[in-house]
Length: 571
Image 1 (cartoon, rainbow, N blue to C red):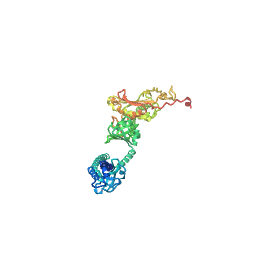
Image 2 (cartoon, rainbow, N blue to C red; image 1 turned 30 degrees about the horizontal axis):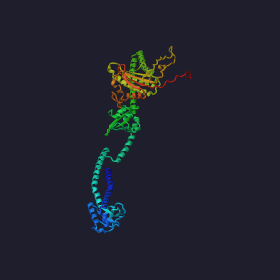
Image 3 (cartoon, rainbow, N blue to C red; image 1 turned 90 degrees about the vertical axis):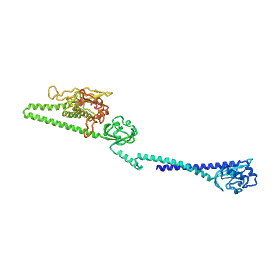
Image 4 (cartoon, rainbow, N blue to C red; image 1 turned 60 degrees about the vertical axis):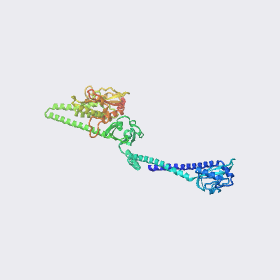
């Protein structure tokens, strides 16, 4: 196609050049004939010879002067006619005395004529001028002709040179077409136009039909393509196409993974509460294509599986402990030590109940209280003491207990792992959890709410106490706090200062991943959840030398309910 276009353009250009060239050569021939006629008409004595001679003659003075001029200029003919149109000179002497073959009236009327015409000598370029005597009166006319064959010869003589130029231009065009065609074939991998169109249609259908996000970047890091799933996962808009990656996503782990600053396969990233698995493949033009998979549901299932396993471990620990206690109790009874058996049974039941009651007194939300009771059982099985800080006090008006339970579960699990791994350091491992209601200042600093003083629960029937009364911290108001401060400390090795920000990065972990999911998401989700609610999450050093994680959630509590009036209470 390119060769045909180049050849056609060259042919058209050559034709367009030849057309005005032929006309230009005709004009030049007519101008030359007119100039020779004008020169002949002003020859001295020519008009006098025409008027004084008795008649035209093949060897007369007019014929001799005209032939001399014809031979000197190379004209085809030089004809002098009188007022009647009779030739007094001609290239063929026998035609002298005959009337001219073309109309001389315009020249005899005093006008100059230039034209292409056909006469006795064939087609020629002609110039005709009037012949005037000494008084300026027209006494005849001079007609000069240049054979048209000479004009055509000049035109044909220009054609080879013109064709040489045209051939050179065509050769350059053909070479350029071949180079462009070869480059185009390399870029399109020798695909025909119909194949490219079909591939484009298939690509559009595939990209917008698959359930994986696809983001294509150019060599400058600008977004070149985003399919529907990537728009959903990354919260992008169609108009973000063409924008730089950091401008569309902002700075963070997700932008680093897509831009290639974080290397590896199956890299984890958290975007808007979603857990994403990203892979990046560079392209030949310096860009890249990144694929994204939504692992949020799988991660939630993995955490539920971890919770189920923790519950199974807790039940197994309770079963094991219960069997041991039953064996001890059976032995005491068989030995007849009934008082010792009664004391042992009372102590065992009391310790378990005391732990649950201690948690329930300080954490009034049932979901969080149940979580901490279960974690205490697992901690006891692993030889770690899980305790609630004495100044903990959390009212039962959480906005979203499940989110806070997820945060607490992540931090407690990490603390148990750290404390249990540091058992060989010569001290009893422990984990301490503190949950407090707080107000948050404009600077983001939590302001603790005064801790309610627990009110002893009188036993019904005992002296000095009513039969029914408020229990624990419920007897004291929790103030108008709307935020929650969570602190989880452990006796583990702690977190070095240079790694205290790294532990919150997606995908970073010092523990081996389980078979069903990857590590390095728990703390990242904790910080992302805190920041989404306007709070913060950071890690420091516990008083005992371990790690201490602090999470502030400014709007985690609902406003306190108004107190009931006396009439409503009686009603």
